[in-house]
Image (cartoon, rainbow, N blue to C red; front, side, top):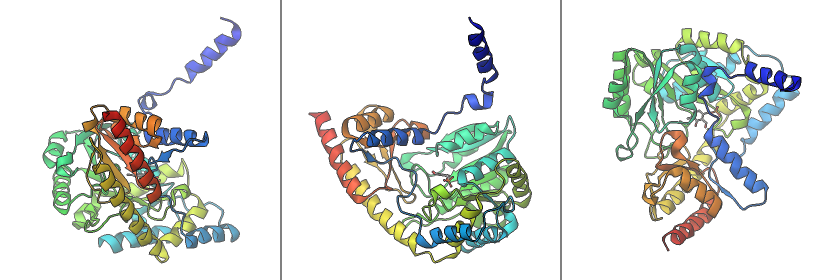
Length: 403
Ligand SMILES: Cc1ncc(COP(=O)(O)O)c(C=O)c1O
């Protein structure tokens, strides 16, 4: 080995990843979206159902607030936990919709809900702790838990039970090391909304076993009647003391790129997370905070309009998928994903999603990254035209396959 090779081997050895990063993979949803985009960029007519973000523009008044923030030089550091008026607006919005009693001091504004979750797990967990996740789960939950040195303990939900939390199974999974339980309603990927009865049972269990509940409610405004969003924080004042509610502007106001999310919870935890954030990102972007404030406090017609459009797309997609041989899909009550069971095709979700992309140019996300090899996630953050075209392509794919 020459001197240069020895030097680069040494450099690589020094770069050996720490253990907590070695078993954390990149987000599979982002990987597939990237592949679909690469094909589209190469001129292929790909129909893309991988999006984890609304396809609407950020509402004009919100954009204007961002522009105003730049023009009026709101371009410096803000307090680490966020602008006081934004923290107050988040508390007010949560109180208005959940009849809770939070103040600005219970709110930490971060760089998106994902960052808020990162802060929560880092502030709550230490090595040896266990965190209960319900599967199918949003792909980042297990990674976020592992990055905090804790162990994800996966408790399945059942399709036949509407993907509702299984209280007996959760009870069985609780050990002396269990620190927290994560719920995500409406759910990414299933679109399930946790029922009032299950929320009440979860709350009772959390209080009995002294668990922290991390309640990811980022899709709270995207719930389709007759389903209704309910938060575990609103069941009784005790629950607000042991729950961290996660929310943000990304999905509700189509602001994924602005990177504003929040955690709302007990003050000591918010203080600990603020200290953590003070040594990592500091405050989230000042301009985005002003835009988020305008989104929360401005008129809300864009939210209702987006919900109405998503509802029409949901119905078109779900009816179309259910009519295809080998596919089964439950109507999602919230979010913008259809969680389609492909077991009837006799192969894994990964294999099917790959074939759909290669043979029909329909890009979806296989369920393996969410904890299921039987399901494929379709995002309906895409046009009715794209949905109709994809249903036609998948119909002919199914026909060819069975001929
Ligand atoms: C369940 C869930 N939580 C959190 C997030 C992250 O949201 P943000 O873009 O605000 O970080 C997502 C985004 O896909 C999500 O689906």
